[in-house]
Image (cartoon, rainbow, N blue to C red; front, side):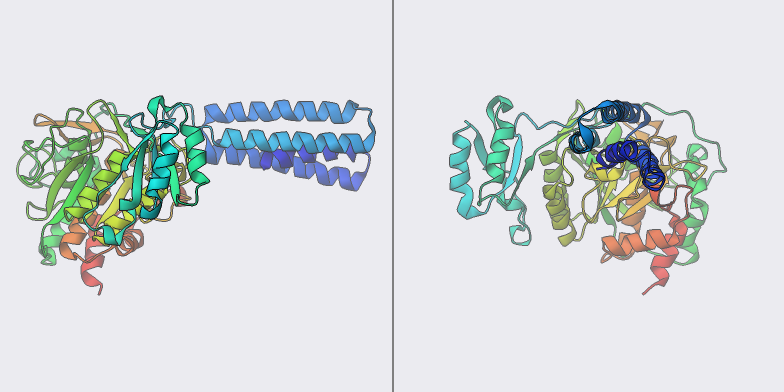
Length: 493
């Protein structure tokens, strides 16, 4: 729409340039359109590289529009018709460029070749949909099996596998037109971009007897000394251990600094083990690092592998993980994963989160690491999730972190040079919203251990109310302050 507006303003400026009032007015509208384009396509939507491409395309369209409008000899009406056509072309190009992902993300998500489509179909329509799919040679089977189907529509979802995927788009449109299909979307492949090891953290005054805590700058930065003391000072005890589920690449359950409850398949990539340690490494055990868990009786850690050993998962595998965690009694589900989405918002993710919420789970998700709008990333853009951005020691949004200004429940935590557990009793520092997310998830798990009935909005209100303002305002949200959050929780009704 901004392209169309800017092109129309240029054309009308040229047509009215001899009329002082209208010429001046159209010139102002034209430059306003240029400013709006830079803001929308470079600052808000895209990164600098793709933004330059966008501005180059617009410049070409404006040059053609200006030349033809000025030089065309077909009269005023002919020029107006050309301006209308050029504006329509601008609108089309604008929409295409907005849907084009940032070049440096590497995350143009494609459907899973083993099951390209997810469709919500009521039981009465299953036979009809199977018949439609057969004409494409596609196979159909149930997608999800929640333990409590009465509280969700997830059991009505089908996974559809199209041979070779050649006719997937055509079948998608056919299903959208069917009265028996409530919803259909691509089952996108979610790539995991594993972070490279970061430089060592900023040395700080030790907050516990864990030998590497002096390299965990983020703990001092969040006043974790006061946090650990608060439990003793105020006599805060857990009502029961909270069950924290890490949906990721797995967890090395034999790691010396993770709770004995940590269970999962071996973690070949190390990402899940790192996230587990950030959230719940055993504090004050004279080993490794400290975490959001103040002691061994606070958090039980469980892992579900939703990202394969080679670094890929699917929308279906992630939703399967959410359902399984919820059915096993998760208090908190932490997901340091996701990718740029081809769809504005996936309904299936929303249904899965809704199901988890109905089971008492709070879902915490990474904002993403492409310096884009987190509203373009899934499951960060899902309803009823707490989405976490990364900030640095200057209270500024990390350069890589997606921003939160269009996210309802956005919060932040340090995400640079975060030292934590990695497989084989090792410790590594990484950067990313993957590292900031388990800090929030671990804190919420402690809050749930104190008050098991705490829900998503209740937890978020406390974190937002007690958090510290960041330099980015709504783009980076408030940074969590764990001690203040715990005191607020225990002193509120």
